[in-house]
Every structure is written in C-alpha cells, then in structure tokens.
Amino acid sequence: MERNNQITRILRVIHHLEVNPRGLTAKQIKEFLRDDGYEITVDTIYRDLKALQGAGIPITNEGENAGQWKLEPYAQISKSVSFSAKDLISLFIAQESITHLQGSPVYTDIKAFFGKLHTLLKIKDFDALNEYKGIFGFKFKASWHSGVSQEVLDTVHSACAEKQLLKVSYKSNYQDKPNEYKERILGPEKIYFADSSAYLIAVDQNDQTTKTYSLARIQSVEMLDQEYTPKELNLENYFKHSFGVLNTGEVQKVEISIREPLASYISERRWHDSQVLVRHADGIHLTMEVRLNDEFARWVLSLSPYFEIKKPQALSDRVLELMEINLKNMNLKKAA
Image 1: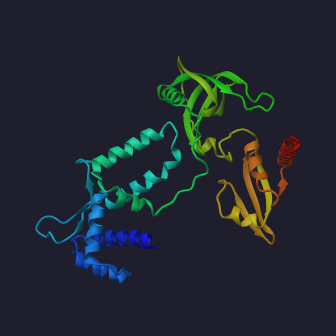
Image 2 (image 1 turned 90 degrees about the horizontal axis):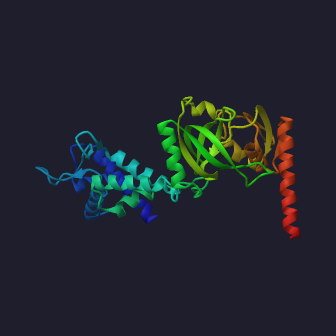
C-alpha cells in the first residue's frame, strides 16, 4: 500500500499544480495534500517535485518567485512540438502497453522511437517514470508470434507502399495437405496486425478474390516488377462479419443459448459488433451475424459444456466434428 500511496500522492501533486497555474509553495502543496488525507513533510514534497522534474514533467521553480512551484503548460521539444503533463503521462502508459510486441519485427523500431522521445524530453529519473507506469497493468490475448521474419515484413510493406505484385511461397492450411507450400501471386492491399500477429490482406491473382494471409506462414516472398492497382479496401467493411481474422465462410445468423456460470462472463464482453444478448432464467441467449468457419466454430466449442446451438444446423455439425476430432486425438495420446 505504501508504494500505491506514493503514486497516487504524486498524481495529486500534479493535479494541485495544474489547477493553480500561478504556482504553489511546498508548504501550500503540503496543506492541499493534508486535505486529501496525506500526512507528509515538506521535505517529502521537495523530493516528489524533484522526481517529477526528473521524469520530464514540466515543473519549474525559477525566476522571481523561486519558492513557487509551477506546472508549465508544455514540455517543449521544438517551436512547433510540445507536450502537456497529461501528454507525458499518456506517453508513459503507451510505452508500457507495447511490451507484448517484444520479439516482433516492429518492436525494435518502436522502442527506439520512445528512446528518442526520452532524449528530447530530457528525462533523467527513470525510477520516477516507472512509478507512473506501475499504476497501470495490461493483459493481452497472446505474446507476439516470433515466426514473422523482418525480411518478409519489409518486403510486404514495400510492395504495399510501391503498389507492386508479390510472389509468395505460402504454407497450406488444408487438413489433407497441412505442410504443403504453394506459390501464389498476390496483389497487396493492407498489412493487418491482430491477436499478436501480422497478416497481409491481398487479392489472389489466380481467382481475383480478396483473402487474408498470415505472414508467419510465408516461407519466401519476392516483390515483382509488375504494378498493381489496389482496390482501396476498407478494413472495417472487410472484417464486418468476421469473428476474428478469417474472412471465409458464409455469413449466417447464429443463435446460441449459454448457461451459467459462463453466461455472466460472455455477457460482460463485446465479442462482435452484431451481437445481441437477452437474459433468461438459466443464462443468456446470444445472437450474431458472422461468417461460419473453423475460427468461430472453435470459439463456440470453447464454451463447453455450457452452450446449446439453436441455429444454424451447419454450425452444430461443424462443432460436433471438431469435438469428435479432439476426442480422437485424446484417445490416440492415451493409447500411446
């Protein structure tokens, strides 16, 4: 609790300086904090103020009123670029929120960017900086998938930017040919980051259909000397009926009844923009309009044993098939 009290106290110091733009003395700050419920000494106030300065927060006590501590409106980088105290705190939070990208091709560049900002802002006291970041926690679905190479990402990015066709060797995801690589000529539209991995939205030149390709499953890639005219794809529309990143399968209305104790958990989250939840005595009735594919079927299966599929029959059939596959695999492992 002591550490948390220190963090919240420092934030209150910033607040009082912010609402008193003419400045406050250390004794005045102490009085305000006492009203907030913090019994501390003037020396502690001085340490807090110095720590804030070290963290890059634009607090000054110079000039004619050296005893007055003021929160300047901005931390100046140049004549046209400056940051408020809230901007700096937001920067610290943003830096903490990207740690799940460690190991990805883009993390090194992002980390270097934040390092340059620290240098420009003359941040000296990283202990104070860590105090701010310590207030917030972040939980992500998964860590970055390390299978995406920098070479693949760079080549795909260049093709998108220069509007050139790509030739890729892509790993099949078909059950009968799970490890087969097939050469494809693709017209790149967008690079899409989702669920700690990266994807290429592209038009297959063989059948002119727009598909989603996992960069982790690209064995090799080459940018061809052939121009490509993008379709100016709207990602919001493209993924409108997708439950995750897969954009395959027929769009159908899905109705699922979910019982407690899982019903409350499901009802507390937004799983899809089309979802409608209706409470009943035993749980909830969930309705969505989504594409039916294995990605969605596996999610429904994860609700076991607390769900009942009302419609469509095609979803019930596929979930049952996945159940049987899982059971078969479990029996094979037991037999081994």
